[in-house]
Length: 119
Length: 119
DNA sequence: AAATAAGTACGAGAATTTTCGTACTCGAAA
DNA sequence: TTTCGAGTACGAAAATTCTCGTACTTATTT
Image 1 (spheres, chains in turn brown, purple, blue, red):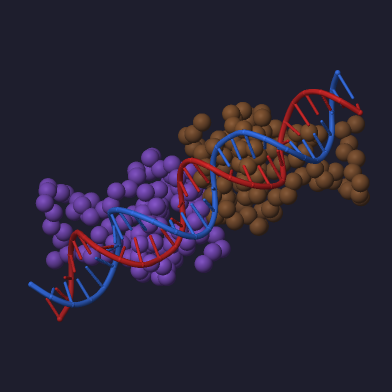
Image 2 (cartoon, chains in turn brown, green, orange, yellow; image 1 turned 90 degrees about the vertical axis):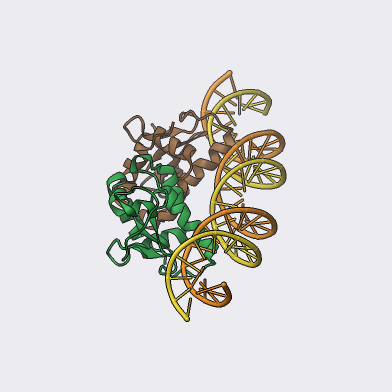
């Protein structure tokens, strides 16, 4: 149970479900800064980290009252910058902050986001 | 010589020459991120830090080939975010990165800017 | 006092980003 | 298989940012 069935040889099933995201070495500081320059997106990242764990959460779980297409946009900006990771769970798209990658690639960044006084 | 003459009691003459900038506690992470999301502005900050010291440098010293009004815009964005400090020296406006303030307020940020591979 | 040099103020066009409605896809449930 | 739920794709309007020309200000130099 809980084993994803994929159509190709695949030692790591979850890879199939993972949406495209940059490798840590390909993350660009200016792109990361741009992604975090929007207060709404900072809130999203803060919410995703608010439970202390690194579980995947649906974008409705984040509880931001905006149209679905607006949320899709912001989550995509965050993912393409390398800040969050997204996976498909059935009909849902769940996300989590790439805490380990970010802490290693940009020390201090997450602390800066967590300390931001916004929502 | 080199003593600024001001029109009011002024124990610290340089304060007169200093352009308005936020106190460290008033710096906002989202505003700082926005200021650093532009590659041109990251280059400016890198250039200002490139000599290892914290001397004030004119915006032409930075050596970026753009119209003066464009440079004025970018330097203002950086100053209002709290990233640089600007002072008047005669007809010049010289700037320097607020390294101490930034290192204390946002640990890791300057390292992130310095490591950015842009110009 | 006139010329020069450095930079600002203002305004406008170009480019980018944000927002959101509508239609669509895809998987799960009835 | 029909419906429902979560989210995406697309497109367009609104807002913001970037760029830069022109005119202006200010301080130094001649």
